[in-house]
Structures are given as structure tokens and as C-alpha cells.
Amino acid sequence: MLALLILPLWLCLFGILSKRLPDWRDAFLAAWAVWGIAITALTEGLSLFEELAFWPLVTAWLLISVGAAVLFWVSEPRAVMVSVRSVFSGIPRETSQRILLSGIGVILFITACVALISAPNNFDSMTYHLTRVLNWMDHHSLRNYPTHDLRQLYLGPWAEFVILHLQILSGGDRFSACVQCISMLGSVIGVSRVASKLGATGQGQLFASVCCVTIPMGILQGSSTQNDYVTAFWLLCFVNVAMDLMNERVTWGNATLGGATLGLVALTKMSGLLFAAPFVIWIGASMYRRHGMRAIAVLSWMAFCIVAVNASHFQRNWGTFGSLLEPPDEDAYQNEVHSPAAIASNVVRNVAVHAAGLPRGRGVVVGVVQRFHQLIRWDINDRRTTFAHTRFRFLGPALHEDTAGNPLHVLLGGLAIVICLWSAPGGSRNRIYAVCVCTGLLLFCAFLKWQPWISRLQLPLFVAATPIMGVAFSLTGLRRSSLAVGIVLLVVGVLPATRNATRPLLSMHSSILFRDRTAQYFEESADWQGPYVAAAAELSTTPSARVGVVCGGNSWEYPLRILVREAAPNVQFEYIEVRNSSRHALLGSSPIMKWPGTIVTIDRSDLDDQLRRGRPAFALGPISIYRPQIE
Image (cartoon, rainbow, N blue to C red; front, side):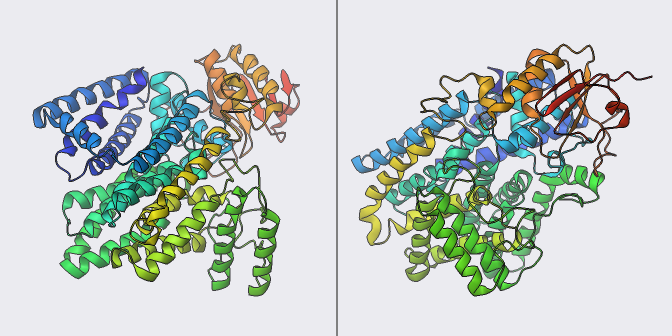
């Protein structure tokens, strides 16, 4: 199990930090942050020499593991006992708390089983999340390349960095979903620590973890290969450090850790910075009040850390698109108008999408939202605040990882925020935290266009809000009801854990326990399995080691390529006939062949005349294969 080579570094860091930090949960979060920076540096470093391959990675991780073990033994030979003792000393003794802790363990265990057993089949993963990983593996580098789907290049790559390491070391995608699953575990632990810093009791800290582990969107994404839970985890790591920076623990070490975690948020998903921005302002105001101009120096250093973590990714974007963030020919995700009515429209629609988690009442919610827009005299589908060609409506089943809602958590979070704003249990710090959560939502609505699948982008905000729920249910009259509410949440949480729409554990016809792994790739498009499997078999026998790809900007490319890779690992793919702003991107020192001996098309018919004159050697469903005769 060579994929486990990536873990010794974290274990050693956790052991060393456990004796230096006041709580084992601080060490847990800090160790992951340092590990996240290390994997970024290693990936970028090997990429510079085009050495992102099996043996360079194995060698690098072995050296890192040995070095970390030596450092651990020299600095803290007994730290492992301290770490284990501190973790087990935190296990609650009360029966009610053990019930909640057991429920948390059950949800996490089921999610981990689904993550390990199932094949990745998320739509975005099939089009770009995992496809970019295969391209990096083919090129042994992160350098930009011509592609028909620009999202493979400019969107934050950190989660895919880890998937890249896991795929190279394990030889497949069996562990790809573990990145989100571990992020879910880390968030469940982290929210309890943030809740404790806000003054929550032990019961309140446990309740915060229950609220976190039962977020329906979080459970569904915990076994996926998306990156929203990874973003949520890095945001939570930053918030945890932010609480220290605001509690008189202003050190350069904390400032570096805070900047690094913010950098990892940006490197994973830039939208996460919208939720982090209010906390940054809180840090700056708090430190300036106590330390004056030193606050500016600390914030400047944090900004430098953010840029340093993202520098290579920004450089690649700038070199290809002339922009740090997104290319000019990509669909705009940002709102084009920021009037009060536009923001109010987005707030209402962003909250309303969580009615997707209700078994009934969707029509009523749509009617209420439409009536609200009539009152404010704003088009509910205004193109300036609505993404591309989408319209306000509910998409897909209630237990789908792209569209699921979190109705109970909206109610609990709203109640907790009102309580904290009204009475500030535990002090004004909790009122400010609640304001930061609300401000994060407003920034999100003011900046990003509404889209039907926007509830998944809100996952980091829900995770960041759960500590407030723990405070409200432990420092007010609600504390007696925390056990009952927690049990209800855990019981309801079993449904998304076991009945995921694309990876069901319990199902009469499509359980992942009984379905072939290849069939699981096509859970959302079963009709495509036959064409893709047949095309993969055809490409696996191709005499050419290089295959040209012509596809749409949102095509299911990954299943075809992973099936070919399993049968013929030496076959490499490259994009041809690229007509967007990435067409001039250089692929290292390797020449780009315009016409490889074999060409596969997916969802495309507007091909070069030279191809059109010849009949395809294979044509089935959305896929055609050509073997043009080049003079």
C-alpha cells in the first residue's frame, strides 16, 4: 500500500506539535496545514523537472518519512504517548455524550466505506477534476497544456494534487475520494475546537461536531472527488488560528500558519476566501486595537504567505491567459451588478435552494421566492446575477451531491445566529463570530452569480457556522435539548450516508456493494457505459502510443481515459483542434503533434476537413475514433 507513504509526515508532525500546543485538536489541525504546504511544495518541485512519476514520488516520500521520523525521535521521543493520552482523555464519560460520539463515528465510518468502495462518478470529476490528474500523469508535470476544458487549467488544483499522489502511488483511483473524506473527519474535529474557543461547554463542542457531521451536502461530498469539503477544512483551520490571533496569541508562527491555511483555501477554491474575508477583518481590527502598527506587519506577512502558496499556479495562469484567476473567454461566475435588489435576490435564492432537501414543499418555496422578486421588482432569472443559461428551479434528487439542500441546518444555524446576535452568550466574541458568518454569506451572494448547484459551494460556510450552533445549544436554555436534537440529526444523517444518489450503499438495484466498478463510473449516465467500454477496448489496441482528443468543453472524458489506462498504461492522450485561449500553451519541451495516428472525438462533430473525408473506424454514442492517413 504505497499510498500510505504520504501519512508518516503528518503523524510525526502531529506527535511533535501535540506537546507544544495547548490542545491535541490544535496539533491535529496544524499538522495537516504543514502537511498541506509540504505536498504543495513537493508537487510543484517535481513538476519543475517533469518528474511527477512513480519512482520519483516513492523516493521523495521515503526520504521525507525517514527525515520526519528522525526529527520526531530527536525532538520528542515520548510525544506519541502524549498524543495518544491527550486524545483518549477527551473521550466523554457521560452516557448522553457517548451516544452522540457513537453516532458521529457511525456516520464517519459509513462515509469512509462508501469513499473506499465506490468508483468516482461525479459529473465535474468526470469532466475536469480527475481528467486534469490524468493529464499531469501523462506529462509528468503541472505545466499548462492546450485543452478544450479550461477548468482543467485555471481552477484551484490543491485537492487534485493529493489525488495525483494517491493515483500514482496506488496505480488507480481507489483512494481518490479519501481526500474529501479525511477533510470531513478533520472538520468534525476542528469545529469542536473552535466551539471550545468560543466558550462552548463539552456538550456544546460535541453538539457542534454532530451538526458538522450531519450536514447532508457534507455527507454526500465526503465520498466524492470534488473539493468543497477540502475548502471547508482549510477554512476551518484558518478560523482556528484566527481565534488564537485574536486571543493575545499573536506570534509569527501563528501568523505564518494563518497565511498558509488561507493560501491553501485559495489554492483549493477561490470562493472560500469570500467566507474567510470577514475573519481577516476581525483579526486586523482586533490586533490593531492591541498592537497598533504591528498588526499591519502581521497582516502583510499573512498576505505574502497566501501569494507564496499560490505563486506557481498564478504564474501558470498568467503565462497562458494573461490573468491570475480565469481566462477572458470563460463563462463569468461574478455578478455584473451589485445593487441592494440584486444582492437580496441572491440571498433569497441561495437560502431557498436548501428546500431541495425537503421531501415536499418545493413548489411552495418556488412560489414564495417568485413573489419576493415581484415585490422587489427584480427578474428572478436576471442574466446579470444568474449563471449562463440556468433558471431558478430545483435540480436532481434530494440526495445528490451537486444539488442537495441542508434544511435542518439552515434552521439551526439561523436560530443560533439570532441567539448570538441578540444575547451574545459567552461574550461579545460570539456576536462578532455570528456577524462574520452572516457577512460571509452576504459577500458570497454579492460576488457570485446564482446557479442551481450553488448549495455545494456553500458547504464551507455551513461548516464554519457549526461552532455557533454548539455555543447556542450549550450556553442558553437550549442546552437541555441538545441531546434530542443531536440524535434527530444523526438519525436523519444516516439517509444521505447510505442512500447517496450516485453511490448508494443501500439500494435494491444499484448498491455499490454489488455493482461492477466500471458500471459505477456511469451511475448518472448508464446509457453511455456500452459506448465507452467499447471505445476503450478499441483504443487499447491502437498501434499508436499517442491519441489525439477532440471534445466539448464539458465532456465526460475521464471514464474513457481511465478504462484505457487500465488496459494499456502506455497510451497517452493530447488535445488537438483546440480553439480557445489555451491553444498556445506549451507542453514542456515535447512537440505537440497536430495529427496523431489515432484520434478520438467526444461530443464533437465540427472537425477538420481532413477527418471529415474519412469514415470513423469506430462510432458509437457520443464517441468516434478516427485513424486518418497522413501524407
